[in-house]
Length: 197
Image 1 (cartoon, rainbow, N blue to C red):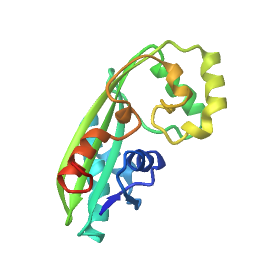
Image 2: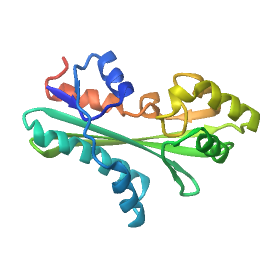
Image 3: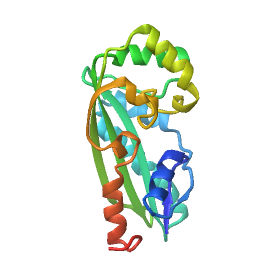
């Protein structure tokens, strides 16, 4: 049995479409406090994504020790060292897109699987995102048209939708861009008998 420790519909959809049966149970822990504490201690984006993914999985694993529990998290990091969180409103979304315009950022997607209250597998994947230069008019129109579908996405885009228009080039897996290093997860699921070999 696999449990996804998340309320992310896109992550559950990726697993389901790939043929992996999973039950979603959100962990509901205070991610913002953990992020803030880790940033204050100088942790990088990779460490933060990995820790958040593990904490999500551990919380659910302790309640369901016989299940494999998958936790996942994604952090957006710019080359200038700034890490962005989900925008709280349209104004902040526009500000973030203006900051990312014409620059490269990286999406660090971490996945951790726990069993019996312990981490038994982990993987981190990185996608390099080269955003084209965006006009203020384009940003405003884009946010107005897409806000409901991107408001919960770090970076304010859904790459599988009109968010594709924001980029010149992408290096890395589109699954990673969408928030889960899916292919490594599927590989591990096969080793545990959740998928046929």
